[in-house]
Structure formats: C-alpha cells, structure tokens
Image (cartoon, rainbow, N blue to C red; front, top):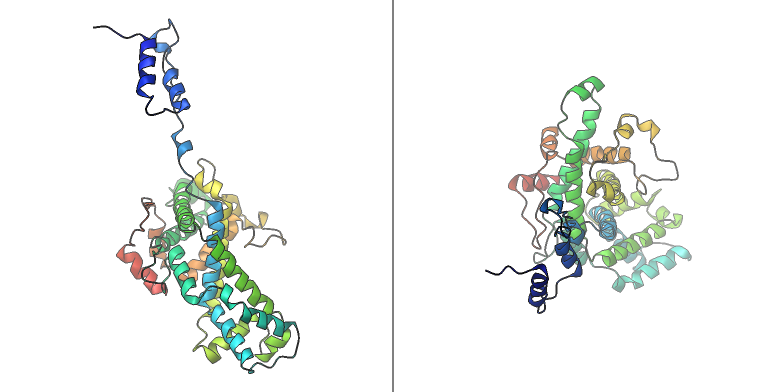
Length: 361
C-alpha cells in the first residue's frame, strides 16, 4: 500500500473541492491541525472554531423597541382610547360638541381627514394577536401563544428574586436562594427572544400607532375640549366618553397601572439585552434592591425612559399585584423551564397557563 504524502493529500483535497468551493477559513483550520514539520504529534495545536459567530442574533433591539410601542398602544386600546377619539370626532362632525374656532377644531378636522392613513380596529387587533397573542384578532392570523407564559415567568422570577433579598442578611447568606440570577436571566432572555422574533417587521405599524396616540394627546391639550366634557384631564375625558357613549368605563385605573408597569418592564429589557445575553456579570444589581435610595434615577430620567433595576422590581410587583397569579403560582412560574422552540409556528400554551391567562381577561 502506498501512503500518500502531504502534498498529494492536499492536491486531492483541492480536486475534491473543485466542484464545491470550501471557505478559506475552513482550509486554514484544516492546515492548522497539522504538526510542525519534523515535530512530534504531541506538538499539535488545535484552534477551536467559534461556532457562535455564525449564528444569527436572536434578540434584535430594534424589534424590541417596536414591541414596546405596540404594547403601550395595546394597553390604551383596552381603555378604548381609539374608540373614544373616534366618538369625539363623530360628535364634533355632527355639531354636538360645541367648540369655538381655534386650534382644537383644526386638530379634530385634521384627525378626521386622516382616517385613511390610520390602522383600522381589525388591523390593530391582528397586530396585537401576532405580537402578544391577545384575543380579538382574525382567526387566520398567527398568534404569539408563548408570550403570556414567558411574560409571567419573567416578572415572577424578578419578584421572587427581589423578595429573597428582603430576608435577613444572615438567612440570605446561609440559605440557598430559590431563584438565582441565572434563572432570572434565562427567563428574561427567553422573553426577549420571543418578542424580538414576533416583533420582526412591525416597526412601521408601531410608528402609525404612536402617531395616532400623539395626535390624541395633542387634541386633549385644549382646555376648551376638556371643559366640554366637564373633565380636568385626558383620563377624565376617556372615562366620561366610555361611560356616556361606549357602554361602561371599565377599570381604567388598573389599565393605567398595567400600562405603566408593562412599559417599564419592556424598556428595561430593551436597554439590557447585553446583560440578558451575557454570562458571569450580575443581571440585577442587588445593591439597588437592598438600598434603593442610593440608586434612584434623577428627576430628568423617567422610569419609562431609563428604568433602573429598582424600577424593574417595582414594576413587576405592581403588575403582579393587579394582574398576576397568587403568590404560590408566582413562585411556581419563577422556576426555570426549557426554552421554547424558535420554530416558525408558535407552540400552544399548556392548559394551566391558558386557564390563568383567561382569568386575567
């Protein structure tokens, strides 16, 4: 038997690869596993390839920014804010809303004439279903069925972790913590990956939603319009129109708290992707939780704009207090599970999660 030398082996490899080109870095890796000329086999050095460098990033910050805006709009949708402004415009168009000439009338006319540029309620509901799995969308639309459980798991993990820090320092140091930093990190990373995947390509819709909200907010700045409803601020106008024309106000206070808490949580996730995807460094700085007075955000930094870890914990506690499961269920949801599949088709929620989420409606 004739043993081919290295040159013939290299030539053979090039001939085989002639019909199917091999990347240059693969050739370099193959050459690097050969020992130095005349050296013993023990001198062999192998440089392991970085397989993670070829993997697509699963958390895209731009997608998270879009889902944050859409979540904000979804909470306002639950307050019927879009129906409220439509009813105000109808009242104005029918001469039932006495307003003198001025900027308020101009803004209402501008809003009415721009209806074709805004999303319809059906389109908005389809968007909420796609991104958050919210009910009310078209049955043929693909819903994000994983979001509800992943959301509960993350905020429950944050809440449970923070409650452990409230224990006596001696007990905290001697007892094993039921929820660790890495468990919270995994829950947050799973949630961020889910939002990033389902938030792909929705930035244009988020812009439309925010534009509508800003237009409504600007309209509500006119005291003459608020006075027409006997209201002092925008929220009283929403409450009045809901009660008088839309069949009931609903729980606006709870929705407002949920909107604020959810916005803080999503903003924190968006700003801390590097901490969610990293290893080793703490995800939540315990000093901010144990001694929050040392880390309070400045007056110029709103908790929605730049939330601290302390703001995150407060938002999670606030959300759970008004919407979440009982304490025993929250502890259960704080425990880690296998990360959901990132396949194209969403995975159905377990029956227990469906029952829990149905109770939150």
